[in-house]
Length: 110
Length: 118
Image (tube, rainbow over all chains, first blue to last red; front, side, top):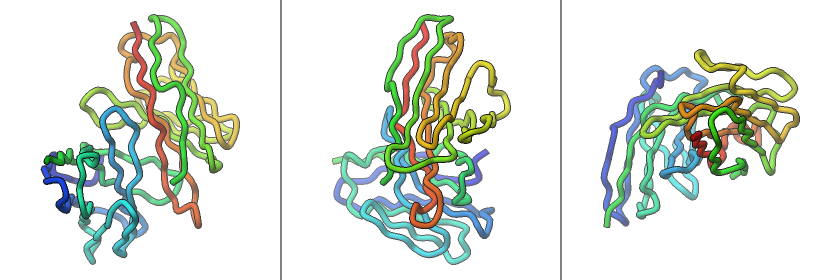
């Protein structure tokens, strides 16, 4: 079973920031937090990952709390193409399996 | 990011036939690849871990004789659904792990294969 918990759905207006929360209260010290998204009928797309420091790339920012029990994925200016299911996953950063939960369905609207 | 190519993207077959799905890492070598299955409105479920040069490791409840996995090279893993039946109709997705250091420990996913068994 997935060890992270996410809200099942969220809405966001186009152009606004989308903040997607994730709880991972049992994460181990050597586990990363990975974020993927899945647009309908496609394979998951890697977004970002982090261990304990906040991370930013061209797609998003990842804010990890100091106790590492939760994180927030931030899409700074959401567009309609960001409508997808977003998955927050704990991973060891090695060639080990990823366990997908049910994710958050983000709907970006006009 | 790294590219994982999956082929075919869609296949329709008759019940009782076998279907082969290919997963290729195009710009990196992957000693480990993974095969997932996703039914409508559900999340991805891991089927097996494919290791280059050795036997695949299957998750509990996945029939290894029905879902044959071959990982003959560092850039190619194949999944063969043998004697397919309608209940095998699903979305099959592969992923490949890039490795550490500069490769950043990321699993990249293919676009998926939608299998429909008539």
